[in-house]
Length: 432
Image (cartoon, rainbow, N blue to C red):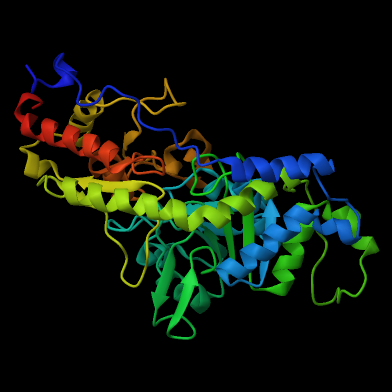
């Protein structure tokens, strides 16, 4: 039977693999070959000299990033995780400090403060936008709170209200913008009242990711941004063996800037910088493709009564690292999200180059971080179920995501996705 669900032995809606997400072409290959022929794969030296800032490809990328995102300083690093570690060290987080973090992000957003002996304190998230909830953040602030690490999640900037709360309490804001490159806040609440700010530049320090699968990728890599000269200097020191560099530095007011830092090797290679510079040039082109697919899938899936498309925060733009939806089981005669999505995935196939990983549609994003064993009993804090009820409900019951809107997917590919959802919806009675 043509309409029999694949979950029960019927024919799949699609049998061809979906396109891969590889956005690398001859432009990146040519840039890498140029670096290889020069033979200088890293331009760094771990002492105070011009090469302390990195090689020509790294410095060119940083300058272009500053121009593109209208930010004073850009500091290239070997990963966004390294960027978060650097940011925490830069703002002076120390043992006993508390840092408010999100339970709904890659684990490094919460573990980064722990590198410096600080305590991560989890606040709940917004039901509609998935970023930290300002009211929950303010409830968690104590006299020990030093900073807030907020993730601009799924491609959307976090709430500017968190900046207001941070200013009121004298706190630092670190923005994890790994998933939100290219999105913007257009808000009358910003300092200039009519300012346009890029995600990643909303807080005191922002971090971007170039990991595989992100909007732009070079395999591994990241970028730190800030408009604060002193924070930028400390970031560059921690990136590149601070303790070995400081004695050779001149022209620095050491009474003003604390340079008693331990550094790491968190430097970006020339090859990675050359790749990302080309990816940045192609970003608008890749994003146009992504947004065409988003518009189509949002329109088609919104026709299913139990599915609510993701909301965009007022005065913001969204770049859809993933495409989020919410499921309402009450509008599906009690059918749970997990069973519905299981049936949808059975109708589809994997992506080229990612065979064995399953269809890229997932339920709930991730388990709330505080339910990981690492956070169960930490420095007197005991995290357990119920700590962040909105996050837990989205995880267990409501939220599902897809990556099938990503570049290289066409409208024909997205039509197969929509057809699979429609087929399962029409046959939902067989799943209850």
